[in-house]
Amino acid sequence: MLTRLLRDDAFEVVISPDIIEETLRALTSPKVRRYIRATVEPHLWFEDIVLLAHLVDARQPFARVSVDPDDDTYLAVTVEGRAAFVVSGDPDLLSSGEYEGVRLVVPRAFLSLLPKA
Image 1 (cartoon, rainbow, N blue to C red):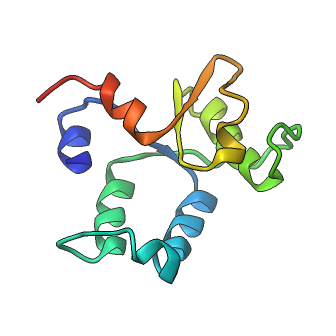
Image 2: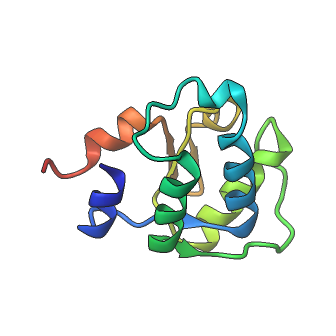
C-alpha cells in the first residue's frame, strides 16, 4: 500500500543515510520481525521505499529537542527536507507533538490524512 501511494505521489518520504541504516538494522530485530506480516522480505520492501524517497543528508549540528537524542536526527531530516510530518510509533519522539511546524504523528493518523484510493 505505501509503495503504491508513493508511486501515486500521495506523499513524499524524506529520509537520510542514517535513518536508512537504522531502519535496516531494526528490520532484522526479532522484536520488530514478530510484528511484520509481509509477503516479501521487509528489507526488500524498504529498499523500494528508499528508491522512491527524497534523500537528505542532514549532518549539521542540531539542538537537542527530543527526550532521546537519537531522535533528533529525524527532526533534523524533517526540517532540512521541508517535510510536514514525522510519522513514528516512538513515544519519545511523539511526545512533543509538533516541532517547527512539523506535526509528529503515529502511522494510523498519517494514513487517515491521505487521499482515499
